[in-house]
Amino acid sequence: MPTTEEKYQQELDQSSKDHHTPTAGAMTGHITVNLLVHILKVTQAKWFITGETTIFLAQNADIWIEKEYEFFDSINKLLVSEGEAIPTTTQQIREYTILEENGAAKYEEGKKQLFNLIKDFDTQLLFITRAIKLAKQEEKVALVSRLCELYGWMKEQIFKGQHFLGHELTEGLNTEEDKE
Image (cartoon, rainbow, N blue to C red; front, side, top):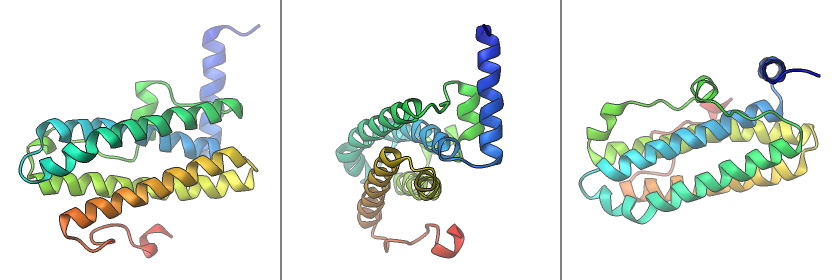
């Protein structure tokens, strides 16, 4: 019977293999760690943002945090039920996130902070669309459904944020050409 260390090493080896030949589980691991990092960034903005954007975040930050954690938890439950490994360590979070953090950002002008949060939603969509394609190929129906819900929710948040900032919907975000 393998030791706990041997089991964990097997998990790390499988995860490495899955990330080099992308699987729905591996791609979704990126999504869940991005959700965690985004929760931290929203929390930071919530406490330090200034100006008129405080109104927007007063209305939306707690909802974003709650909803992102709900997706984080439910998606991880689906992954575990599919026999997939999920990122559970700070090292894995650092390794798998695509979102950038900067402690000094909390002192930036409020609209810039909000726009950076909106851009983070947009960046996450890149991983979500890839994970949906892979999950469809792997016939992980429940995962496809939940990821589609996350995609729709993030698109709605992008719309609300861009509207508040007075931007066109795609202004400053990834274009379809960037996503290819």
